[in-house]
Length: 106
Length: 120
Image 1: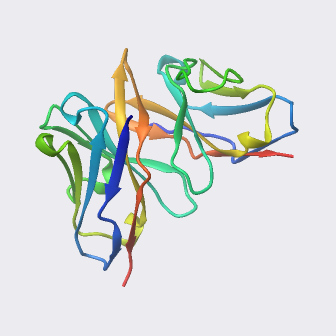
Image 2: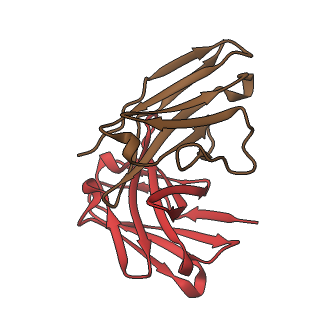
């Protein structure tokens, strides 16, 4: 079965850039989406179709997808960006999530 | 304004049954794909089931044969009937609208979730 792999944690200093990877076999041939989830809250959609942002999502969130890896980039990271981040892809009528990455803003 | 409101969670013994409801406002379930996604305590997200066009349904392997997704267009509501519940089914269950376009499918609106605890 298809799997998506994320690093368990990423640390970043305020104002710096955080990159979160999501790996899967030929993931670049599929579309990747990204979600942010803060403690006690529901997930929210950050990125879909690899790089598109819903209108309410700040521009500092961007996405890319090529080869076996999709990447979520947070530019100018803020304290409010501390959260869990999940990648997601669709394959053969199965909706798959990565294991999640906890982003800590130090 | 889009709202998805889940209900029906609670404490249930192993082997028992529970039905979750998701009342939707702001769009119609009849013209959208709708999913249930769950999250075990301290764990990641796991897609559970999807329904569209009324009679087309998909299920994750761990719940096949035990869970049934359905919808009531007149009530704009989606349901998840859960039978033969196991401890491993303990999770917050989220209802989510599932957008599907250009060979992509993702979850653009989520409810607040309802907690299901399976324990004796």
